[in-house]
Each structure stands twice: as C-alpha cells, then as structure tokens.
Image (tube, rainbow, N blue to C red):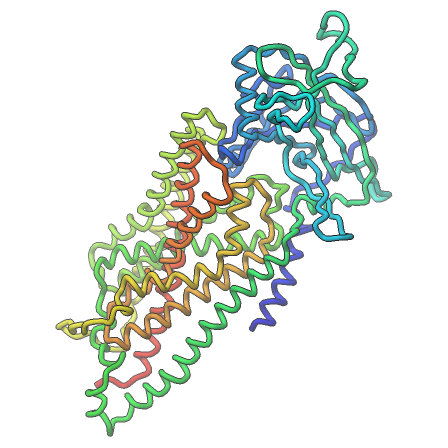
Length: 630
C-alpha cells in the first residue's frame, strides 16, 4: 500500500506543471506591436486588506477600463484595470509615465501603504509581474525564484544611504524585463516572463514641465537620491523596458512561479501521514481479524450460551446499538452537509490534478469550489433524507430538508457577511460588492436549495434498511465508564491523529492564503486528503469498538465528534500560525483571519465528522450482522 501511494504521488506531482485550462491559447506578438500592461490590486501580508491600484495617486490612463472578472476573482478582491504603460514588442526604451503633484493627503496615503508593506501587482499577457531573486541555499545549485508583485516602497533606515530613518520612500521607477520565446513553428514571439525591479529616484529636470513635451530628466545620469514622501510635492514616475530571449516554452512559463523549492518537506508530510495510517490500519486489522474473530466464535457457539450471558462485551448492547440518537435531525443535517463538502473537495482536487484549474485562469479554483458546492446539493439532500428515514424521523422530513439546505451554508454566509461589513468600512477592494452577494444568494436559493430538495425526494423514496438486530423497547442502562472512556476525553483524543496526518501540508496551505504565495502541488494535496479520509475512518472505528466493549451504545454522535474534533486542533494551529508567522496588528485584519479560519474549521469539522460517522456506521452494521442473536 505504501509503495502504491508513493508511486501515485510521484505520478501526480508533475501534473501540477505543463497543464493549462482548455481554451487558454498563446498569443504571438509582432515587432512593434503594443503589449498591454494591466494593473491589479495592492496587497499586504500585514493587513490582509487588498486595495484598488487607482485608490492611490498613481498615473492613470485617459479612460480607466475594468477587465471582466469571474466570481472567484471578485471574491479574492482582484480589481484588474488598464494602465498608461506604452510597451512595444522588441523596443528597448526609457519613458516618463507621468508627473504627479501630490497633496499632503495623497502623500500620506502612499506613506501609510508603504509602512504596511504593500506590494503592487501587474499583469502582462496574463502573467503576473514578479521580482526575481536567486535561491543559493543549496551549494552549486542556484535556483531562480519569483516573488509575485513588487514592493511599493521602503522605509528609510540608518543603514540605507541617503535616507532618513522612519521616512517612507516611493518606488517611482520600475525596470521591466520581458522574456520572450521564438520558434519556427509560429510567427512572432510569445511572452514567457515578466520581471520587475523597482527603485526610488527623486527625478530632477531642467526648465518648466510640460505634459505635451516633457523635459529631459537630469537625474538619469546617476547620483539622484530616493524619492521621499515626507510632505506634499511632485513625483515623476518612469519606467524602462528590456527584452531577453528565452528557451522557456509558453506552456512552461508558469514553472518558475510554481517552483516547489520545499519538495522534500511535502514528501516528509506524505510519509508522516502514511505512518499514522499504517499504525491505525494495524490496530483496525488486529480488531477485525483477531479480536472480532474470537468474539464471533465465542458468541456463535450455542452450547456455551449461558457463559455468553455472563460475559461483558459489545454483543450485550445488541438491543440498543441501533436506537436513534438524541437530536437525530441535527445529525442528519450535519451528515448531509458533510457529504456536500466532501464531494466538492474531491471533485475540485481531481480537476486541479488534471490541470483544469490552471493559475492562468485567475479565480478558477474559487469559482469551481462555489459552483461544485452548489451542485453537490443533490447528494447532500439524498444522504440526509436517507439517514433521517433510517432513524425513523417521520413527518418532520420537510424541516430536515430545509435545515440541510440552509443551516451550515447560512452560518458561513452570516460570518462572511459580517466580515464583509468590516472590509467595506476599510474601503478595501476585498469587500464583495452588493451585486455579487445577490448573485451568491441566487446560487444558494435558486439552485442549491432546489437541488437539496431533489436529492431529498430520492432519499425518502429509498426503502429504509432493516437493521441486523432488533431494538429493545426499554433502553439498557449504560454502566459507569472509566475516566478514559468518558465522551469528552475520547472525543478530544480522537481528533489528534486526523489532524496529525494533515498539519504539515496545512502549513503550506495557510502560507498560500495569508502570505499570498502560489499553492499548486495538488498531487500531494490529493494524497493527503485520501490519507485524511482513511485516518478519520480508522480512528473512529477503533474508538467505537472500545466504546461498544464498555457497553456504551451511544455511538451515533460520538462517531461524528471523534473525527470532527480534529477541526478544534486546526483552529488552535491557526492561532499558533497567527502568532508565529504573521505580523498582523490591525483589529480588522485579525478579525478577518480568525473569522475565515472559523469558517474553515467549521467546514473541516462537518466533513471529517461525516467521514467518521459513515465509517462507524458501516463497522457497527457489519459486526452485529455477523453474530447470532436470539
């Protein structure tokens, strides 16, 4: 099994490179043809609040045009617009972009963003601008690494020449290096790299300024200091362009952005998870093949029936083990939503592994997840209704279906809506517009809710299964349990191993979200998800067996909570990550972090709880169907 999983990982890992969404075609540029540069949002890991590029006094084109954005881009806070950069294919040039006379308020707005370490994001031929640095951590094997975007400026310090400590300096000049690839198979050139090196220059010029015929800059010969933002005044924005031929083909131009420099850590994550799975698999195998086999032999020997009655063990609760739990509707609603989330996750992972969610299609991953969640309403309704009928829910099936369609999505939407108010208050582009909120509500109530009802219809049409043992009229008294078999203790312990199987990969996922890094090793992630499913199933079966042996038949909710408690560890880990890896100081930014991590933990809780529940349900059914009961 280990050999198979490792081989699968080796097969899937390269799938993250070289695949592109069907329909994303390369574009060839002829010499002298204009290459459009678009501007995107301004981002900071210190605030987590993106802003529109033109929310600051940057140079603007005559007419600002918004690019078409999909649902995922809007939810991600992207605001893509045209820019005044005039770049022509193969033309090396230095140009003045514009001259701006900043008011004191505009200069302060720039300075505040620089102190919050904001980065500027641009796009050229669908490639994001990046600053290049060389990773020489491995001797003799230097690797070129891209950091997406470029810093808006820097704070002065005593060790930086010609700067004043604490004063903000604006990067008003960008040196653009564009890499292109030519081949005999096509005419023109394809852009395969977009590198930007920013710098701060306090430009000077002779004579009076004229926008129609800008004077020659006297600061280009060198010796000019950086551009401070200590007060109102003029700033001249400039750029130069350099073209470099490249052997990188168009289909591989994202490789440097997606470079996985920490591949060994991902493999360590997989091996760590496999060790947990092997340990649990050994315990399950021991229970199934040795303990249960011995139990079956003992319980099925009719000649020693009297001795069996004197035994203690899981068979003694056969008359109560399928007794419906407390709050059966809530359990059915949770399980239905868990199926919806699990189906969305697995299909999204499959699409990503096969290259159908390329980073070239910005916002594609988020859009796919939202739409798949909506369409997974059918299995959500089906499984919720089928379980509700199994638990003899009766006439309350309409209420069960409505709650399945609205409870957990409603909680998530309510948290999201409240957080969105705070983002609106900060005038951030990350605030979801009212129209998009209406679109999300239409997706929810116009498509998802009807699909849940459709699935519920088929779930209620299904014949309720006959339990392998009859349920007694009078509930059996549960013996007093040892401290380590108390529900709270066993639930808390049960969540450790599922979380342990994913926590290393979780670090990279959190870094991609909160440190604005690309995450595209979906081959590894798919394996980790599969290992998580196995771990949740196995730990729940083990804990359930020990519980039944202690003659405690209240397994329905405990099986859900045992694996679902791993979400509590996920939230605790997010607190640790916040304290050790992030430098967030603003209240709203911290609120966003913990609000979104609360949503993620709730989703993780429902999904892992559902996996544990169905594993335990199958296990209990199998063992009680295999014994003879009078």
